[in-house]
Every structure is written in C-alpha cells, then in structure tokens.
Image (tube, rainbow, N blue to C red; front, side, top):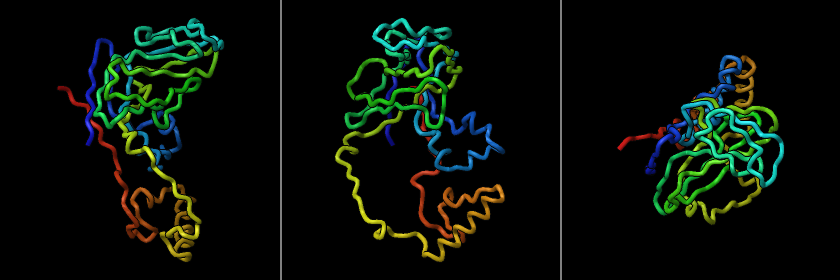
Length: 233
C-alpha cells in the first residue's frame, strides 16, 4: 500500500476518492451502464481534486501566446488564465510528496465528459517537486461558457512507478498459441447463454464474477472494488 503526503494551503482543492457514479450513467435506461464492470471499476481509479464552488470560463476562439483570450466568469480565485494557447490552469493549493520511486500521474477523471474542454495528462516527479500541483485544461470549444460544477472532480491523481514501467515489453505471438478458456463447443454454449441473457435486457455478470456460463470459476480479478483513503494528520 502506497502513501502520499499532501500539504494544503488556503483555498486549496479538496481531495477524495473518485466516486463510481457518473451523471451520464445515471441517465441510461434503468442505470444500465453500471452493469459494465470494467467501466464502473475504472470510475473510482484515483483521487479526485475538486473545488467547493462553481468555476465558469469562456474562450474567445483565439489560440496564440497572448494570455487574454480566456475569461473567468465564476470561481476566479481558483483559476490562473495566464497560460495562453487556449488553456486554463487551476490553483490547486496542494503540494504532493511521494517516495523517490513513485511519481504522480494526473489524468482526466475516468469516464467523465465535459463538452468543450479536456484536462491534460501529465506525470509529475513529486519525490522532489516542491510547488503546488499544476493542473491545466485545453479548451476546445469557443464562445460557449464552460462550467465545472462545485464538488465535481476536475482531475484524477494516481501514484505510479515509472521505474517499474521502464523497459516493459510487449511480446507479439500468433493467435494459435493463445490458451483458450473454453473448448470450441463450450465457447459456443457460452455465446448462446450470453446472447439469451442480453436479449432479455439483463446482464450476465459472468465477467464481474469471473465465472463461466455454468458458474465455474475461471480466474480472479486483481481487485473488485478500489478503496483509497484520505487521512488527516
């Protein structure tokens, strides 16, 4: 289990584990999207940073080195607009410190979509970086106010080991060497069962439960639910 030290200043962003919930998933018929285990699990991947007030901004469509083309309409104390090039930056007020073999990945909140703007993905060497965590968005839609609602995460942060990732290798093999989970006949039976369940409007949950169509275990998930903590010291 990794631990990250986070030092907070005045008017800083809040930090909490990301929720499984997404507005667009709530709006699907019978909240059907939550049945997709890979999506639901990934929704809670990382800690989310958010602000307690709405932030609204608008870009005039000009992308150059001048810093005057983004206007903040709400939440100005949390925003820095001097970046230019159709970008906007947030004053997180948070300083992160990790071990030497850990870095901090910041990326868009998984499966959260905001029309007209997109967070940059970046890796920060937080073992020595001593400034407030930088976070910026690229604005892609001009002349339309864009709002990040209060308490809505605007970025996800995750500790990763770049040294462990370094020199990882993808080994390409012929499909004939792949070890199949089912025999050919079992696979046909599996497809029939899944098709029957799906056509009835239900969800098989075979993948979620790591079982085949007969209820037999076929493996284990690394985790089935993420539990990330925030503690005060």
